[in-house]
Structures are given as C-alpha cells and as structure tokens.
Image 1 (cartoon, rainbow, N blue to C red):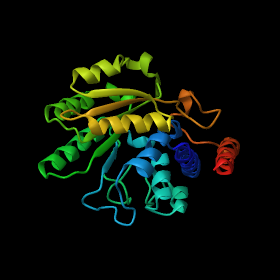
Image 2: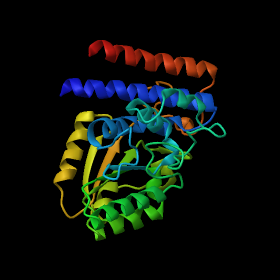
Image 3: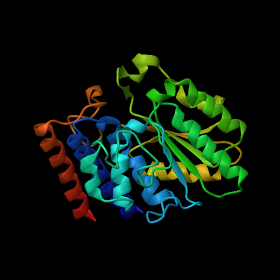
Image 4: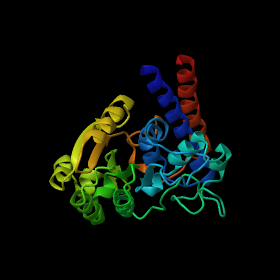
Length: 281
C-alpha cells in the first residue's frame, strides 16, 4: 500500500508541475488553490473514481464537479495524466479558442462533467447528479470539491439541505481547507468555523483529514461508502501553494502566475520532487 501512495505522490507532483506550466503560459490563473487540491484530484481519478478516458461520457461513470472552478489547472493536469487529452494542451491554458479555459467547460474539455466557476453553484449541480442517480437506480457516485472560502456562499448550504433531505449517500463533498481566499484568511474575511458542526447540523456525516495524506483520503472515502441515508463531507486541511516553497501559505498566490524567474524556481523544485519520487519507486 505504501508503494501505491508513493505512485500517487509522484502523480500529484506532476499535476502540480502541470498547474505551474499552465498558469505560466497563460500569464494568469490560480496556482495557489490548484496546488492545495492536487492530492485530492489525484486520488479521486487514479484510485477512486470509475471513469474511462477513452469514453468520457460513459453513462455509468462516477461524476466529479469542481465547484471551486478557478482551481482547474491541476485538475487539467490530472486529466492529461489520466489520458483524457495530451499534456501539451496545458501550455494553451486560457488562450482564445483553446480546449482548456480558466474555468472548467464541459462542452469543450473531455473529462469535465460540469461547467463551473460561479462559487456555490457547482455543489448544487453535484447534488442534482447524485439525485438523478438515485432516481435512475444507478450505482455511480458523485464527488465535488469546494473551497473553504466558497463555504461563505449561501447556495452551498441550500445544496447541503437538499442533499441531506434526499438522503444522497452517493454524494461526497470535499472541502479544500487551505485557510486562504482572495482577500485574506477565511477566518478574517468571514469565519466559517466550526465547519464540521455546521455540516453535521445540515445532516451530513463528517470526517476531518489531512488533505495531503493519501492514507487519510483513502480511509475517509472508504468510510463514506459505508454511510447510508446521508451525504458525506470530508474536511481536508491543506496548504495553499503546496509543493512550491515561495507559494505555500501566501495569499498573494491565489490568483497570479509566475514570472520568468519564479517559473524557473517553481519548476526546479517540482522537478526535483518528481525525480526523488521516481527514484524511490
């Protein structure tokens, strides 16, 4: 099992590198939250979700909705690593007419199940997918990732009420709790704690984890499958900018790209991580 975690670490490091490459070539984007969520995306697509890269619209696939849609650069990298499209597409991120835009677009990007970006709305779409699965007696599961700052949006809680009311035990909310949003810390802008008690009061089963630990992600998702009659929320504590030393826990990296010198430093750090992990396998 430890070896499989190491392989996931390698894939996540490559996904982080892809996010840096994409935002650098775009000269814009959101690297901080992309890096914090990379481990979650990696685990879902490589160890959890039942999907087919050669048949992205397969009717019985598990669904994924990135509710914090601006943090798509590392998701795109994961999809490329999974084989949905070529890695070279990352260099055209946010370019006019390119496949990969600044927010996920289900009409143009293979592997994207829902267009998203307006914060709060993605979780509602995920609830609809899970509800449809129940109505159709399908076995697929639905996963959504939202930000902790996004939890300040009222629509998140309307969706949560809907999910619990309809006993959507085929639905998992991941909250990427990196503690930062565009204007500062989540606690200072509009505090959301105690977030676990809030979700519990809305009818969710809740698990708190280290969002960079594949072992803890795995245990939480395995537990989610045992819970019946209620949706599941995983509160994942993460580091914004994870994997790039000068970005970690720095709010300024919420929504800007590296310049030439920063790009050299960031890629060198991530390539060193990748080389180390490859050597350990």
